[in-house]
Amino acid sequence: MAATVSNGGMNGAERVVMEFDETVTTSTGENGEMNQLDSIKELLDEVEDQIDQVKSQAEQIIEEKENIHTTLDMLSNQDQLQGLSEVDKEDVLVMVERLNSRLNAVNINLSSVRSSSQQECLHTVNKHIDTLIFQIQTDTLQAQLLCRQYLSAAGAEIDHPSDIKFEQHLLGCTAEDQKCVKKRLFGLLDHIKVLVGNSIQETA
Image (cartoon, rainbow, N blue to C red):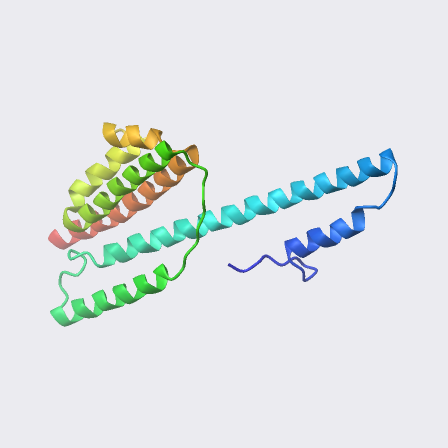
């Protein structure tokens, strides 16, 4: 991931170091020590803001990567490939596999502090979502029903019964993970709506 460069041509870390050199004095005595401490704390606060920005950018890239994965999964759906010749289907699947390989080469590790219980809950939630993605490829209408149940369990404003087991596991995750799961489910529902719309047009 490219570093953000300021208008002066130096990145954030270089700017902080320069500010540190300029602001931290070598004064002696109590007042000098307090001024130095205040300067250090101010720079540390700025570094913390930069860390938050980097984390936010990483989260956005991870979300974009997941959305691309979902799109590729949709494109490899047999329903989407109906009407194509076997040769054309094979060409599409080969291209999807190639793009998946390129996408998987992009790795961003964003670690969150989780207890063992929270890790287990998140693992179970992800297994449920994997099942949902598989069902999208086999039974789109049933997948739409299940996705709405999951979104209802996630607290989304959807007038639909929730999946109790999914809700229990999701509530066991961190607040940040719950937010990410909800975004992912909304993305999946949007893809499902497109597939359902295409299916209706084909049968009309």
